[in-house]
Length: 100
Picture: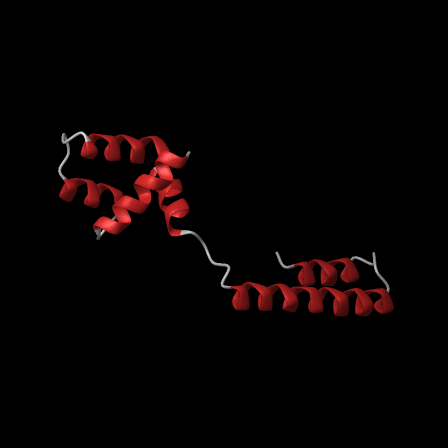
């Protein structure tokens, strides 16, 4: 739920006067707009490797990568299991798993 919606609910519940609501709404609206600008302009997006490891589970990804590097699993099967389409993606996942 948005913080702006919460302010509206507080007004409806009688916890804020109309003046308090207007003041707090303006301040919060500017804060939210500033956050949106920072995120959009700063390029702060998600990290593919962190997301993929979270989705797969680090132990599973580690097992697949280890098995592949030891020659027990083919790279084709590892790519399919890990959701990788390129070797560079596989290498990125490998680096991320080893770093932890």
